[in-house]
Length: 205
Image 1 (cartoon, helix red, strand yellow):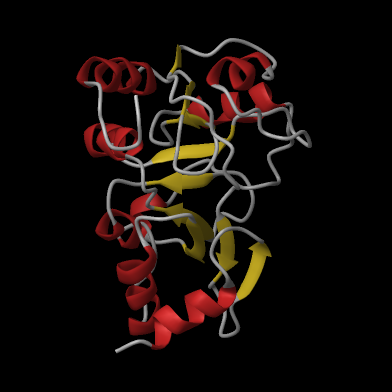
Image 2: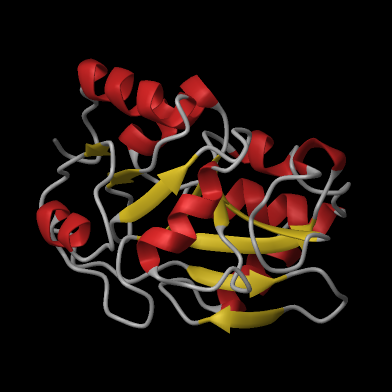
């Protein structure tokens, strides 16, 4: 399976597992991700346990399209809407003020903010189109590199997951994370997209 082809049966299996409150491993356009459905009570707690990570580091949320990401945040100013339109789908996570649609989701970290991304991967977008936004973190033990294969990523966790989707070897870099909650945007994690590129997208007409 590549980033341009989708396996309908695999989408069905991933969606069923997520709706049941289970965790899954799936490929993205960057690295392998460990995902659960934030609308199912207790589901995201499994992600922290599987990574052996404290819940003070927030989970990101992956969505099917830019509009779905914007819907999870408080109303955005035009510059941020331009960033979303120009750089999504892609390897950019924006930390935004959380809106009512995501209120009460257990994502760890600051409950007043939400990190959102629309990935450039057809499988993830097909799954999220089916079940809604998914809480996602890299599929690795906390503090360790993310393994490049699905089997290695699943084996690195503290326990089994319901479905492991093999998307081939992924040697990408985790997404850029930009905190856009204040007047001065700042990079929380360096990645494939520079802050200069984000600023240029925000200023473009």
